[in-house]
Amino acid sequence: MDLKFDNHVVLVAGSSRGIGRAIARAFLMERCRTVITGRNPAALHNTLFEFKTEFGAENVMACEGDLLQPEVINKTLTQVHERWGNLDCLVANIGGGRGKAGWELNEQDWQRLFDLNLWSSMRVVTAVLPEMINSRRGSVVIIASIVGVESTSAPLPYSAAKAALLNYSKNLARSVGQYNVRVNCVAPGNIIFPGGSWEKHLAEREEEVKHLIQTEVPLKRFGRPEEIADLVVFLSSERALFITGACVIADGGQTRSI
Image (spheres, one colour):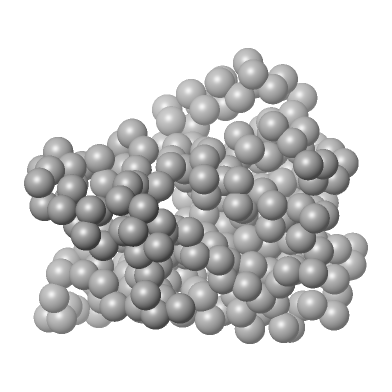
């Protein structure tokens, strides 16, 4: 299927490894000019080298830094504009679920996970929207999680932040739809990749994790980053022009509430 990207410029925030890396690679396979970002210089450099080798240096650029910081966001967008101009697509893949369990948490525990899982994505999206609105075109896809959809054992601040992110994307879509800018959300389930949290959980408590997957996921397996990437690329494409305000769950059937 021709997704009709026509050499679009895409920023995948948080793309040096895992789901974000797979998303960036999928855009490159569709001949998009793709911007990758990451906080870890070594991981970002390795990914950039691999992408340049496979897709050509003219099609990929890397911007290092922590997108929690507004100055890093502004610097990244400046670099993109100087090389390729305005963005056509943004993927906000920023976040992490490591935190304290239980309800006895202090404000710092809540603030850290809200900064990482809500405010960071909101800042990136807010910085990019003016150019999309002025161009009267654009696609934003926000990566959330199934923990924002229903009750799980994930840390409370992480779950609450992801739930807020889902609501933000839904209402934002209503606000910017008149400008032909689309906003969608993808909520992945249990995705496994090297260096990811599920790989660590398997190493620490293999039988418990395998039991969870077998009993809670109807497809009885982990998801792969590439499966999330294919969904994100489709939602960003010209083939999905009538889809906005959607939250697409990709979890092997685990979620029961929707």
